[in-house]
Length: 136
Image (cartoon, rainbow, N blue to C red; front, side):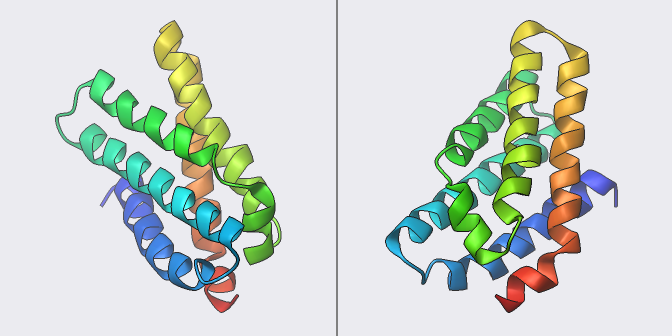
């Protein structure tokens, strides 16, 4: 199994485990949990298409959707779940999606690749901290 599929399946598992208890918190945290989940789901859909026969425009439609959802998540809500989670989510996942979108629109492959690397680093960070996230 290649690394992108491994990270993809790991993030799905992490989101499923992470969100039920997180969603039981206050209403702001419920909203952040909802958009966190939607952003991961949209990005995972883009990854499925990327690993299959999806067109670049179709893939980027889901990346843009993931980015829009990620902008609705509050850093502080994620940091309440685990210190640093919100910062990593925004500095890696959100920023990576943004670079991919900018790279696609500007036809700048360097930005696209840098964005993919950031999102991959987010997946790695998330999996390294999954046990801590589950305990909270």
